[in-house]
Length: 148
Image 1 (cartoon, rainbow, N blue to C red):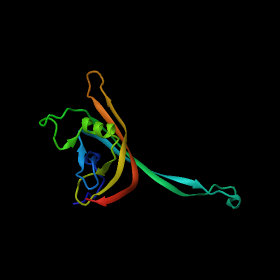
Image 2: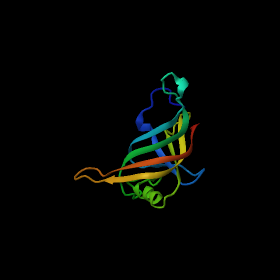
Image 3: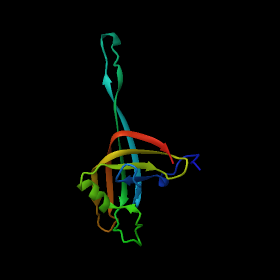
Image 4: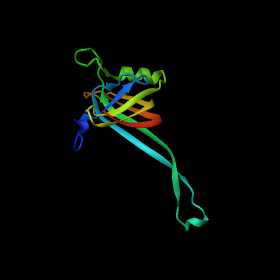
């Protein structure tokens, strides 16, 4: 049943697939996720614009990003059916085009998908604290909306 009120951020995750139509797998131990969409404009200001700037639409783009806790996957403490830093590093290292989904997983809720490249992957290890990671995925091509 679709979420019919404000969505709890805990319910939204970033899911990765390595092929079109592939199985989307959750990025492990996520602490936040974001979707950013943008549209460029083109200036059409002319002598008939009465001194006001006029614009038309141009290219659209987007990115998804997130933060997560670093954990080695041992099958017990770390779920096997999730992606960790090591999996993401492999995609980054091979410059692979992958597919990302911004999704609650709740039946009836909307989700957003696109092909992408990992443009930033970072791990941070402060003294006596959790090791954290961040990822930025730049979307390429169409960004689609669908329903679970």
